Length: 108
Image (cartoon, rainbow, N blue to C red; front, side, top):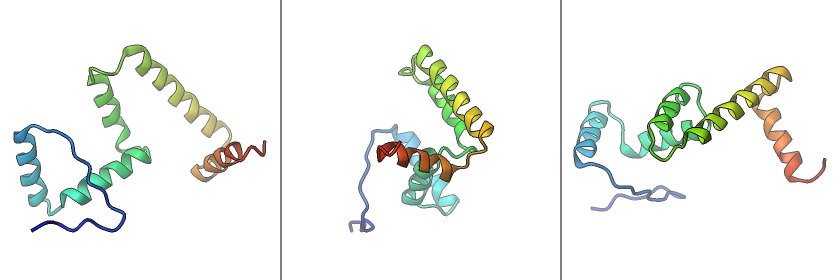
């Protein structure tokens, strides 16, 4: 029996350790959460830069063999500056999106 993909859905596959996969399935069943829901919610939180998730993402980046120290430091500095500008000018998420829309439309 093949599972039906929701309209607009797509398979994302990646290698994983068998023990992790088995333990994930067990834990998700215990918590009554599907893999589909879990990974989609996680991806949405990551893409939206959910404040509850970002400390974990920072820890993952620090552990990553691919994350070079200078890149990580630059990323932290830029994120700090971004937050400072948003606070200084009292911008909300919609304001920031509008700014990017203006830049993209070349109306500036």
